[in-house]
Structures are given as C-alpha cells and as structure tokens.
Length: 53
Length: 314
Image (tube, rainbow over the protein chains, first blue to last red):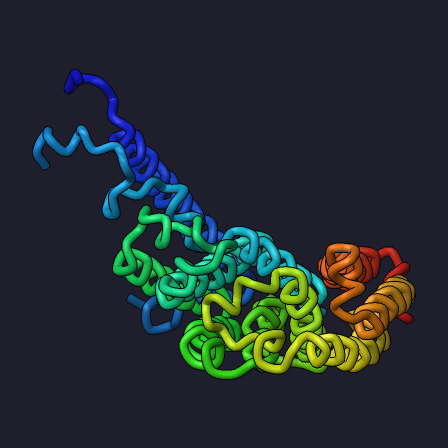
C-alpha cells in the first residue's frame, strides 16, 4: 500500500477539521452579527462612566 | 502516529468524522426543537431582532443537541442492546464515551452562556434547566427506574417553545405554559403507541417501559386517558393570545382524529393487533407526529397572519 494514497482515516479527519473550521467561522460571523444588532438597538447606551473615558 | 496504523481500515475512536459528532446531537430531535422554539419565539407578542432571533434558535438547538449527546454518553450500554440505537456513534465504535461526554458538556455550557449573552437570563435559565432535566432527571434517574419515565421525561422536549417565548418576552406566561403542556401531554400517547409495535427492544434493554411493567392492555388504557386529558388543553389554547379561528379549526379536527385513534387502540387486543401487524398503532403514531406539527403550524400561522387582521379573535 502506497503511503501517498489518501486513507479513509485521513478523509475522516479532513471532514472533521473542515467541519469544525466552518462551524467556527460561522460562530465568529454570528457573534459579529449579534454585536452589530445589539449596538444598533435604540435602547443601547454606553455606560456614562465609560463614555466619559 | 506510525505509518503502520494506515493498514487499519476500521473506524477508531479519536478519529471520528464530522458527521459522527453531528449524529451525537440527534438531528431529528433537534429539528423538532428548532421548529417549536421558533413558533414560541414568533408567537410572542414582543418582536425580536432577526439576528438575535436566529442566534437564539441556534443556541437552543445546540443546547438541545448537547443534551442528546450527553444522553447517548449515559445510555451507551442500552444503545448497544437495542436494534434501533445500535448504529449510534458510540455503540458503532466511531466516537468514544469520553469524547461524547466532553462534546456534550462543552456545547451545553456554551449554548447556555451564549443564549444568556444574546437574549436574557430567563431564556438561558430555562435552557440550562432543560438540559439538566433531560440528562439528569430523565436519562440518569427516571428512564431506568419507573415506567412513568416518558411521562415526566417528556417535559424536557416540551420546554423549547417556552424558551422561544422567553427569548422574546423575557418571561413566562399562560400561553407559553400551554405550549409546554401541549407537548408534555402529547409525549406519552405518542411514545406508547410506538412502544406497542416496537415491542421487543425495550424489554431486552431492561428499560421499564409501561408495556413491559404493566402490560399492553394497561398501555392501551393509558394512551386513551392521556389523549382525553390532552384534548381540552390543545383546544383551550385557541382562546388565548396564541390562538384564533384557524388554530381552533385545526385543533378541533386533529383532536377528534387523535381521540378516535386512541379509542381504536383501546378497543383492540393483541390478537387483533398481531393479525394486522399493528396497523392501527402505526397509524396513530404517524398521526401523533402530524398532530403536534399541525398545532404548532396553526399557532405560527395565527401569528404570521395577525398583522393582516386574519389571526386572533380581535
């Protein structure tokens, strides 16, 4: 068996790594979207102590 | 890792694919969680930003899935025995029990924390309680101890619309409790109908299902009693803010059909059931799925049509 051949185990690992990568990218996008949604809200206000610096 | 391991063709734990981990989340159960939570969210009288709503549904789904993974971790011994569950990732040897536990715990904590940050503490608290209830109260305690396991354990599956409602309103109300009760009371007849025609599995696994401990005659009686108790709750919801003429019409038809099905199950005995290969029981089980889907679709329709003056009683 040639070592250069893609083994089924490698395919499984690749699918897991790719899946996890996509999930993490999606999670980052979701948190970014949530942040925009929250700060765009009319009720949102920076606490006065932080706003004053 | 040495190259010698490349000759190994069987799946080893530690090398599970993405799909194996996804299967731990019980995707089919998750789809019901997503649907009922979405209905709870949209039926609420308070609007939610679409991205916040999307994130909330996602975190509720992940939390529900995580509890499924923890359930598979705890029930791995039962799953190895039962035909229906033999192919799950742990008994199939694709994911180790430790991996499933770590996966379930991580996602549980993450989903609750993220739901709290994205929405409010009531919704997050309800999600945390749902996970606790399903894993500790149902899986670890009730499932192997009492034939009423499915009755009390069914509460775990009934929480999602309540969480969805809490995401929007930040609280609990009569409507959200009614949606909870609808699923809670529906679960036993739905599941017992399944038990009647999947008879050998639970017995072999040593799970005290009603069919095993009290017999099939008693199970038939229980199905009828729960269906009778369910009907006024399902129809009564029509007269609250989540209901209306469409919901009432759907509820009346579906409850009449479900009651008729439960009555037919009660009237039959095992000889009749064996002779037609549990035709009625299978039919009622299929109907029960349609029953729940129909009620929640009607609630969704009422809330979607409300802005056009079609929904509600007003």
